[in-house]
Image (cartoon, rainbow, N blue to C red; front, side):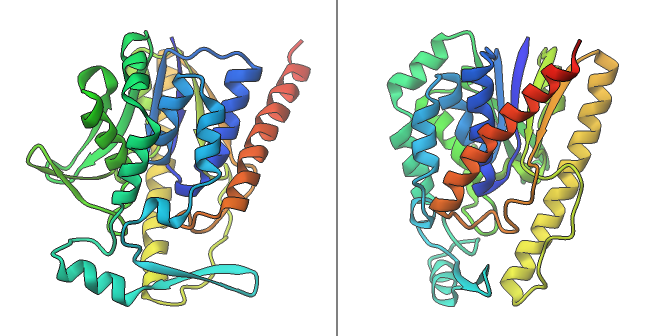
Length: 300
């Protein structure tokens, strides 16, 4: 059983889309299982439908407004770098309305419902492919994996949205009596879960470099400090997931093919830049092509 696993990574998901497009279209990989966390969960339904061009168009045209119904930060470009600072008005407005987070992401929920149609959902349900998204249950202190086989259309779309909610910058969702947030808070790379569900070969797209580089500028304000802290925490979670995944795979004789980003794409994946994301998609495709051609030359 072959599985495609895509890690979290915000706007860097465009790179993952390019890698996946090459693996599916050029390499002809037919996956039985698709697992995604955060931005990965946005990709997998369309990839399972072989609608790579559709999801590419969506990813390379998304803007901050497409994601945030109330954006808690402002982006300023200084000395060639994007810097974020708190939008005090929007944050205070959210608190006055009773929100528990700095910002809200209901526009993303609307976008998901617009881009995954009920007909496409039913096609996936009737196929032999399993689509699984990762969410963090903060109330129960657990990571949960939501399969398309267990839910109806609106419920599953909401789980995809929840998987992407990078709390506290995006919405905190109360569902089934529990509070849920971004799946990356518990499992950035669900390799172990894919193995538990029977995967024997896994293509894992990791939206960070294989070797850690010092790549963050000094914090300029409280908001950038908070994003740096969360990025540090998620990087540690991701590294732990990969180590555990490699260990379990070795013990179960599972093949895992890793696709890391060859360079640091961005130091703030909350910033959605159309031009950059177009480049990242193309670089993901080119990188996967180069890696597979290189492997073919090595093999006798």
